[in-house]
Each structure stands twice: as C-alpha cells, then as structure tokens.
Image (tube, rainbow, N blue to C red; front, side, top):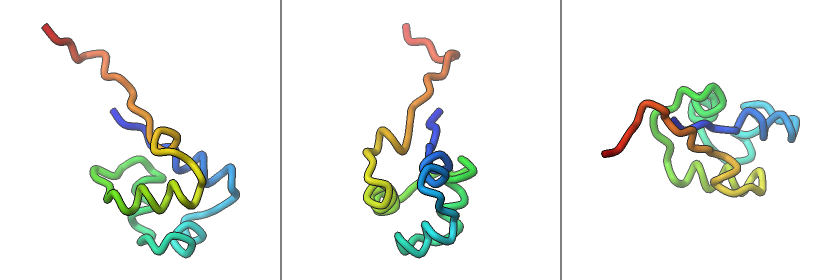
Length: 73
C-alpha cells in the first residue's frame, strides 16, 4: 500500500485544496483524491509540482506500507 502525506504537508503549511490548486495549476480533483488517499494513479508532473511546492522529496510525499500478506517463496 502507498500512503500519501499530502494532507499532513498541507496542514503544516496551512494550505487548503484551493491554495494548492492555485499554486501548482493542478486540478482540484487531483489534489482532493491525493488528500483523501483515494487516488489510484498520479501523473509524474503532479508529483513534481507538489514536491516543489512543499520543498520535499518523493519519499516525504509518499510512503510504501508493506503488505503483511505478501510472501515470496
């Protein structure tokens, strides 16, 4: 599972969806899906714009949470 930390970053910078949309040029829907962690895919340009806006790395924006059910033989 991939966890998106956009909501935390927005809170730390006291920004709402409209603020992020204006600053990045991304659609509000894209930001809302990432904020709510319901996005199923993300454009690389969107990731780049968000990382630039929040001065963070991709690893600070997204985190992989290992699925405990996966096992490899």
